[in-house]
Image (cartoon, rainbow, N blue to C red; front, side, top):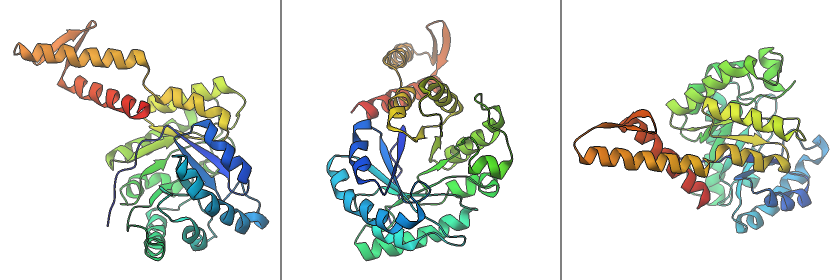
Amino acid sequence: MSHRAMKPARSLLFVPGNKPDWIEKSIAAKADALILDLEDSVPPDLKVEARGIVRAKLAWLAAQNQRIYVRINRSPHLYDFEDILAVVSPHVEGIVISKPCGPEDVDCVSMMLSEAEYRNGVEAGTTKVIPLLETARSLELAYEIAKRDRVGAICGATAKNADVARALGYEWTPGGRESLTFKSRAVMAARAAGKLSIGGVWQQVRDLEGQKQSSLLDRNLGMTGELALHPSNVATINEVYTPSPEAVAYYEGMIVALDQAQATGRASCIYDGEHIDIAHVKTAREIVALARSFNA
């Protein structure tokens, strides 16, 4: 069974699955990945129709080199196997699941995915799971969830008056002080498990400066990308999560400086007024490689 690491994604844009024209237009936003939504953004009486629309658009999106995830529905007791069976294909990187109670839900979905992969002729284990940590128990057990084989990333996202706020009883503020602890918990859990950590989500979609400040906060906490609710927010998110040309030049210079120091038998040096050694250069190499991956 194959369990490859999830490729980094700065922006993951939700698109309602019952809107075929929106799905087609969404590629113009240049999000790293789309999340075609069968859940909250789709009216209950349109969910079966949305499933068919999403399934019909997968090959077209893949032909545009668009990375695709699908958020599936859940009943009070189980995730929707019909959703899973409809969308599992070589075109879909993974599924997004809302409100898991804990790692048991991920295990259950993983078994469903194994069956769907078998039926649909997809390599076993290749379909990722991104759990949205929206319950108190899932946030408490973030590491147990993150270390599941199929999990590619976990979402430590907040939204005003949404599921996480209700689960934890906090009151949302633009500065985000009330969510720092559990966002950092999600980052630590993801990093400890070798997975990606995804933040967000900014609901005031017309306030692009607010979006930028929210994204910067998440990036500074260690998030690797975040959810987007509107195409207009994608460019801001991508900018925040892409190392700037100035930053890349700074870190490339750092690598050269330490290489020169090591050539003379030293393990550290002063670079741009700061003491650096191999630990700093490891960070520099990661940042330069990340920037190149997004610009490739």
